Structures are given as structure tokens and as C-alpha cells.
Amino acid sequence: MTEYLEKDFDIKNYTTFKIGGKIDEAYFPDNVDEFVRLLQKYPNIPVLGNLSNTLVSTSGYNGKVILTHKMNKIEIEGNKVSAECGVKGPKLSQEVCNAGLSGLEFMIGFPGSVGGEVYMNASANGQCISDNITSVLCYSRKLGLITFKKDQMGFDYRTSRCEKDDLIVLKAEFELTPKNKDDIKKQMDENLDFRRKHQPTLALPNCGSIFKNPPCNPAGRLLESVGAKEIMIGDVRVWRNHSNFIINTGNGSSIDVLRLMTEMKQRVKQMYNIDLEPELKYLGNKNKEEIKLWQKLVQK
Image (cartoon, rainbow, N blue to C red; front, side):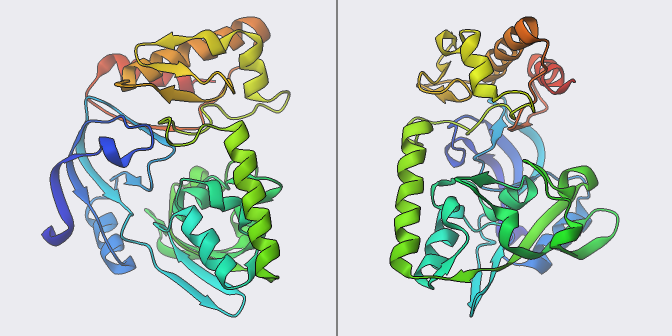
């Protein structure tokens, strides 16, 4: 399996945050069989997608990871679509548009990949990825390969059974609606315009929404009310246009991000007695201060 292994892999420029150190060993499977062999050989190996929702420690990661970049096949037959976990959201959205299929217009502005988007039931502009899913091929560390129908996936706001049951998404099947291509393209353009106005583009390195919305109030509104937009630590700061985004203004580090997140969470806790829950993931095992900060951030 050495043909798709890289040692001392520098992951920084693969992340949308432009933050991260070296990974001891990174594997790049390009088909389901290779992927499964790796998961069987290394049962606890982290699986990383497009790294648009993951903060990787600047100190790096002392271990092995799987990167899904090469798992990028799309198949379209009539109104049925199959996409592997490494397919980027914008590419899938564009491909189904070209085929005259509607249902994934919202993904045109998502920097993530299908695996992560199914895992967290990504949504925007009145659509979510679970709307048109028919089945999902997953790998269970206990049961091996298993296919779930949509109603077995436990989809809810920003979650699915994948998180609860430690499932890894390998491929998703969709059933979409035939529609005029121009109408689909118009909706995609409107979605992109909305996203540009409300979220930072990747020209400002970021990791998307930092905290999940609690039931009572959007996280951005809570954070704005406690003055989060004025907070800056090192080279990372809260985006001035929306308080639930952190941008890397230069050479920001992971510890800067975690310290900033901690300050954001503490302010909301003190003012409203609400514990904000991180939406992004963290990968790192070398920096003790970072590990402690992350443990505090995920405590409820």
C-alpha cells in the first residue's frame, strides 16, 4: 500500500484555514477496496475530507490519517446520482446541473466534500444534503461495510447517525429532480451571491461556521451581542461581517484559534449561560495546551 502513502506530509496548504503541521503518515486511497483495507489495518485512523471543517494542529499529528481526495468518482444515470466521499461539493453541484438535475444547488458554495457533508447533514438556502439521498455506503469499525437507506441515517440539524455510531461515509446515492438547466444555474448563482454576502470566501482562510446554532438563538447573534467581532489573538480574528466565523489574517496558528474560540465561548456562557458547541473538528496530539483547550470547548 506504499503507492499512496506520504510520510511527513505537510498538510497546511490542504486546509481551508491554511493552518496545520506535518502528519507522520498520510494515505490516499482511490477506491473502496483500498479504503476498507486501510480501515481494517488501522482501526482508529482518522479520516479527513476536504479539510474545510477541521482545525489541524500547527504542531502536527503524531500518527496516520486517510485523506479522501482521490475518492472522487461521480456516476449519473437518469435522475440517479452516485458520488464518492472525496467529491467536492461544488463539483457535484455543477455536474448534476449540467445533467439537468435539481436538488444540490446549495452545494455550489460549499468547500467541503461529500463524505463530510453527509456526515454532518450539510445545509444552506433551504436545502440540505439529506433531502435527496436514497442510500449511503458506510464503513463501521464494528460491522464493516454496510449500506443504510435514508430513513436509517438519523439525519437531523447538522448531524446524522454517523457521528453517534462512528460511521465513515464512502459513497452516497441521490435521486434528483429533472429541471431546466438555466433555472438550476440561476438558483446556484443566487446561492453563491448570498454566500459571498454572509460568509467569508476562501480568499480569507477560514473553516466555516465555528459553533453550532443552539436551539434558542443563532450562534452568530449571540456572539455579536457579546462583542466577539472585536476579538483578535495573534493572526486570527473574528470576521467583522459575521461573528460565527474566524479568519486567518496571515500566519495564524492552531493555538491562536483555540484560544480565540475559548474566549468566544466563555463570553456567551457568562452572558447567557449557554454552552456553544464547536462545529469544526480538531486534529492534534502533540500540544498539551491545545488538547486541554479543546477538551474544555467540547464540554457541555
